[in-house]
Image (cartoon, rainbow, N blue to C red):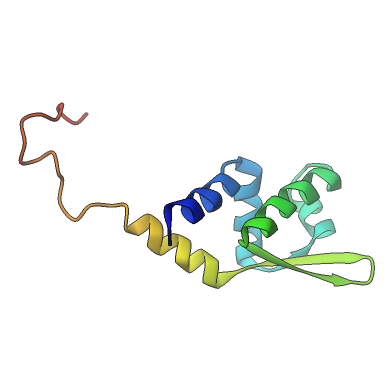
Amino acid sequence: MNDERLGELTKALGHPVRVRILKTLMSAGCCVGDLVDQIPLAQSTISQHLRVLKDAGLVMGTVDGPRRCYCTNPAVLQELAAAITSLVPETDPCASTSTCPPQT
């Protein structure tokens, strides 16, 4: 995953409501009305946050008559997890140099 894509995904997760929506959808896909029941925000607010998550590819949606239902996109979430894991160094780069400030 390139840096631009990683930035796009982390930006989409940059709001606590979107993180909560994603966590809710990870346990079970659901429709907007169900999310509104679980997250005390207006339907329009939930829908706006879902649009950001969908545009980033983190969630997928389907239309079932008047209902819009969403679920997570496992492939993108696995890709995101791998990219974040790659940011963690195997060893502490400051452990062998005296130029880094002490860790607190």
